[in-house]
Image (cartoon, rainbow, N blue to C red; front, top):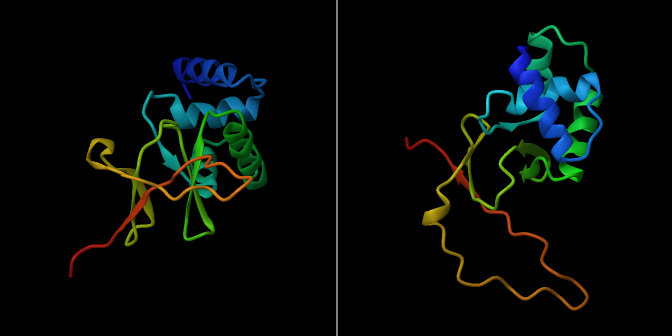
Length: 139
């Protein structure tokens, strides 16, 4: 990891008010060090860290991603009720889920129109609306 990526990761953590531990800086740098948004699973981020020779456990990656979610640095997008992706783009936007590859990508926000959502039940409020458009290759 180069110095720029390290500094970018450290500054990003500061935005969330998180202490820049070595493992957090490593994972933050892998996520946003090059300035590009990413959709990762805990497993794919763990593999990326391992490929760079970083000593970090999968449990630590999960816990760190949860901490990033809690402070609003990433958002969690759940697919199939069990598979979670973590998105560094925290603005509201729809996603494409590519079933053939198990990949999540951004969908064009300007093409999505939601005219109305159901009223929340009494005593509840809508926290967010997630739109995941499932795709498969034509045969």
